[in-house]
Image (cartoon, rainbow, N blue to C red):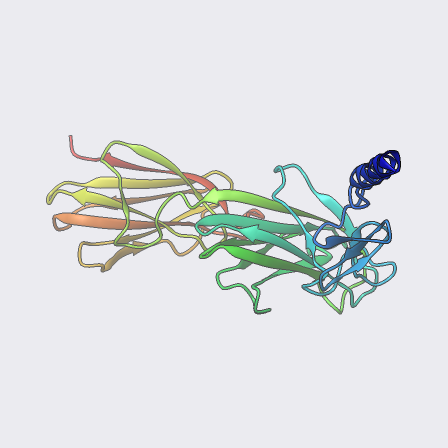
Length: 304
């Protein structure tokens, strides 16, 4: 009788050991945004809205034959790329839209672009940046070139942003193929307000960048009454512009158009003592420039 009890105990212990060492059916599953649920020794994926189970994974719920989803739930997640990198895609019908999602950090500049030429002087695609509410993202500004549509924004808060790519114009010939890219351009280099202007000592030169289009960098000069100064801005690829203000905020000079040689100068003289501010910006449309890019700004003392 004791032997029978001992044998039974060993059998039970072996059964428990075998049950504990059975492989986890979820070990080989990749449910991505979903959750793996072991059921009857098999793995199944519970997928969130916008995704459907596909074997041991979750796939975006897109229309058959479409490469990217048409809704926020089915948007393709993308990460910032290298400057020379892009990914090919297709608009499968003239009315198709492709949606992409990416995360932004407040204070950083992001540039989402689509590339594709349909001949002439316009691209075959356009981009709109949308917030989580489905509305156009405030501050997002687009620039059109011969073969690209570039849309940049300075993020004012962190979160998820959506890029919607669609046909450039309903009246143009439909070209389905395009490429897209996402760049993280980093934080804005200079403040955009008069009160936060960056001081520039006389005799020095600073370098900056205007991005996205419409960005304005503000610098300051502490002028001495009776002295004259030359202000000079040189754009790297676009013509530079300046708006010079006196200590009271009054406009003393403003560039009205971009010169083809990308250099703008202004001699500041006969002014009152105090802090003068200079708003720096770039013109687009001059020699196919985009109104974005680098520049240098200098202040020289004209007195002997």
